Length: 311
Image 1 (tube, rainbow, N blue to C red):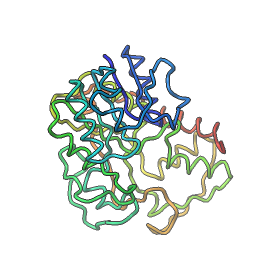
Image 2 (image 1 turned 60 degrees about the vertical axis):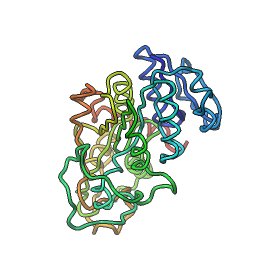
Image 3 (image 1 turned 135 degrees about the vertical axis):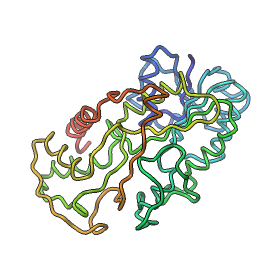
Image 4 (image 1 turned 90 degrees about the vertical axis):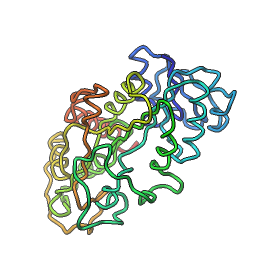
């Protein structure tokens, strides 16, 4: 198949391009040229231009004749950006694979994930979150102005073939937040580790390679119509467990300190566990639980962070 990735030069795009090329697809990456990625496979063709020009009628994307359009929405997800993508897909007959986020769910706002606002003592809804869980109605707390995955997805509902992949917090080379903080502290020899409420926070996370595998699978076999799919690890740890795993990988012993919730500098605090179901990812798209195994992916992430600390 001919697969074109829109804006694929940052984190998700290069990983997806590698997976698609390895699967035998012809891949092009359409982007502004402002961020050339060293991680991109040389086999990927580059098409440069402003997004609106690339996706316009008769533009470079249409002339490339893609069978599938993968949009990472690296510059921001919005109704307008999705509408341009949908129009291009309709003209070319291409399938859409849109990279969204689990931040579309109302539960995450109620749990305080993001900037900690909107925390509800009694959140509504069951976990793990399934794709039919209620979506939030307002912007995601802490998101960049104009960026809204809910609005982006809504614009794709009328498309003939549009898969919205909803990753959790992505970790891996070039894509780290919680792991990055822990590795940096260990590198500085900071053994004191403040654990809000004992570190019981449970986060939705996903290895970068699993996101790439999901994109490749969605290109080949996502159902017709608008179809959403969570992209998360098959199992995970709470924050204290994650810290223990990182410490063990670094042969570093923490000195944990129990502190009250919301009184420490802790990445993405959440009062309630945030977990999403990966059932569709496994049973419909066929992405196995070991693609990759989370513990192996974490070990690779920590090794990469250790090697690139301070760069």
